[in-house]
Amino acid sequence: MRIIRFLSDDGRVCRGAAGPGEPVKARPIEGDLFGEYSVSDTEITVARLLPPLEPPNIYALGLNYRRHAEETGIPCPGIPLVFIKATTSVIGPGEAIVLPAAGPGEVDYEGELALVIGRAAKNVPEERAMEHVFGFTCANDVSARDWQNRLQMKQWARGKSFDTFCPIGPWIVTADEIPDPGNLRITTHINGAAFQDSSTADMIFNVPRIVSDLSRSITLLPGTLILTGTPEGVGFTRRPPVFLKAGDLVEVAVEGIGTLSNLVVNE
Image (cartoon, rainbow, N blue to C red):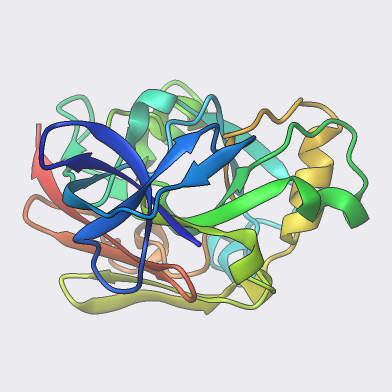
């Protein structure tokens, strides 16, 4: 099932089940998305897509693709490298990525597969981890590299948590429709040109390992969003470096899910 969160034509914020293609109609979902819910037989008009999720927490992985680790010159980690993004950084499809006045010059893109936790997870064995995954969406782990890597030592959480630095969407595809999250093509285009083109098969730690490992130290609540890392091709490793600028259109696509599009603007 493809689940959207949207503004209806009468101004209500709704969740709904949408068919293929760009959603213009959806069947409203009533109840707890991560518990008991029902899907209406009646369709209503979708005025605007919203972020498909309001997560209680956002965790993200660094250096989780082999070729991305190679391009940075950093050895592959032996365990998942985890950091936190602020929930206030979330935006949805079609919303603008804002280059912050406090650090506009080295803002980078990172196309990613993101997973959504459906059942609370604590000390979950790897072989049971997928039972706790509700679904998947596209994400862009937007990063101010100067804040992340140089200003006052390392500031990963700050460099990756500016407002608008976590675009997600355009919808959630439930896990039953993604039989193998470890073999999905993932791309990032800027103004139509390909900058990232890889596969989740290049992940160092796959989805079950990520969920299991994080659950050993953190209780993963329903609705928690986990960004699983970015493949090679990010801007700061290029020569010369490529950073986002006002007017750019960034499109992150994940096979079996869809395309997340966001325009870049100045603050």
